[in-house]
Image 1 (cartoon, rainbow, N blue to C red):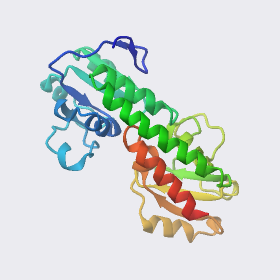
Image 2 (image 1 turned 45 degrees about the vertical axis):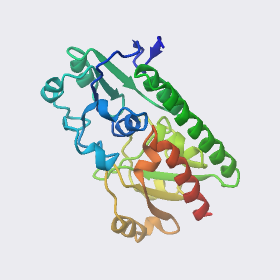
Image 3 (image 1 turned 90 degrees about the horizontal axis):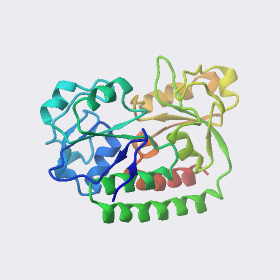
Image 4 (image 1 turned 30 degrees about the vertical axis):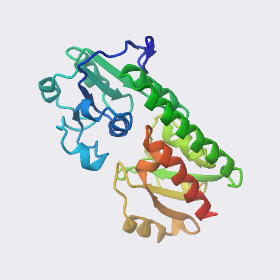
Length: 268
């Protein structure tokens, strides 16, 4: 298959053997294994932790934001897979100087998972596996949409960081995924994709629930209890959610849709 275009507009040919992949995106590392490419993954970030038992054998090349170029170079990859949100542009540009193929991803909608499966499946000769994942995702998406008819819209403040408090704009994959179950993120409009926010009475007045993500900041049950005890949070539901299930695209997104649907059903 030819003419496979990534998020940077680069057209990729089908890879020829031997294939050596460095993944700089945790959810895509997991997806590569789901596509049957685990043996071809020669490098990962320290945040690439799934599949947990098998990924441990793969050398680390730093974090998503502080990639060690020297470590990547030493692994002699044929392909590096990066992401617009996860990785710095200057890092990707530097990698392109010595890696033959840099594949840039940027899912923004849940449906973009279908394109992602087919892009990687096409590049690495795993079309059948990609179509199997696509069928499973499409079925899960349809089931979520059917269930969501029963969910009244709720405005949620989804917190991903503290000091400063940070949330997500509606122009993100995470926000658009939450919208599938009628969780509408606050603020409605933001200049930044991941804006800082004040936990003020004015902000919380527009919120029905506050969701504390387990990543990238690891919010705990204690954090939830502390916030729920504050006067400004009176009458607001405050709960922790699995950040991998809500924000990871790729193969994890299939289970993630079921997770969100079940969570909303329990909250009704």
